[in-house]
Length: 113
Length: 111
Image (tube, rainbow over all chains, first blue to last red):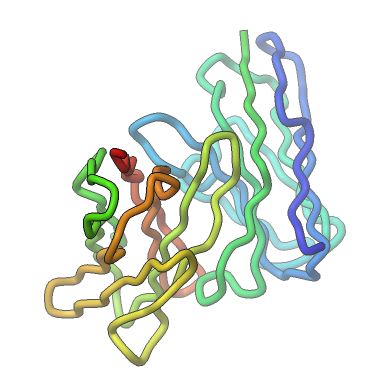
């Protein structure tokens, strides 16, 4: 089954404790992206990747890191999480960045205390 | 700067009535436009897209959207609403490897 898999679904952590949210897709998609969803703000793009070893900042990249060492994986790293990073995070992938539909993961609800 | 606007935070429609969820865009050139739906505790799901061609686009679950270049709009429509259509709807638009999402519109279908 074609899918984007995110883990974990729920995560509670404390300020400053490094964490990684994993994302994997099995559709051989070139394009992958991370979004955060906040009430009243919709989806905002954090980082995206057009292909392996190619990553770019989205609209809200501060406090986040990503890597794309393999085509299928695109982990999101929070080196020193802060409470303002409490949010619902989604990973997505598609064949092409703008013409093709995005496939979304089920989301990761992160709480930073 | 490119932008996508959904002017209504919430839309309430009685079951069986037609529904419209509004979206306007500001994207340079010929935009790619999408609608996605999000059910509780789920990721976004693709409904339909406009790339080029017919201005009326048909999608999943009986939804359709009309592309209007002069009004820069891409409103989502359905002739007869179902209670199960209640969800959060996102319009998205883009060009040149950039996709921007609107803030979302919560659709409530009243039984």
